[in-house]
Picture (cartoon, helix red, strand yellow):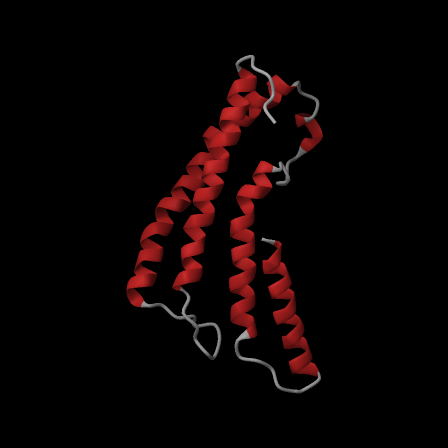
Length: 151
C-alpha cells in the first residue's frame, strides 16, 4: 500500500517541477493525485482499524477495564459503525454500477480520464472495512463475555 504514496509523491513532485520550473503544468497530475490519494485512503481504512489507529477520544475509555472497553466497543459498533458503513456500501453499489454503464469520465481535469475503476475502489474499501469491523466486533464480544483478549 505504501507504494501508492511513492507514486503519488512522484506525480506531485513532477507537477511542481513542471509547473514552476518549466512553466508547463500538466493536465493529468490533479486527476491522478486525487484518484491515487483516494485509493490509498479507502484501502487503508481496514488496516488502520486492525491496528487500532483510528482517532478515538481516550479520556475515559482507557480508564475502563478491558471488559468495559469491549462492551463500549460492541455498543458503538452496533449503533454507529455497522449502520453507517453498511448503508454507505449499499448506496455505493448502484452508484458504481451506473458509472460503469455510463463509461464515466472525470469532469475535474482537461484530459477527462475514465473514473469508473477508481469509483469501484470505494465499495471494495468499505467492504474490507466492514469485514474488519466484524472481526473487531467478534473480538470485543469474546472479551465482553469473559474470554481473553485475542491478538
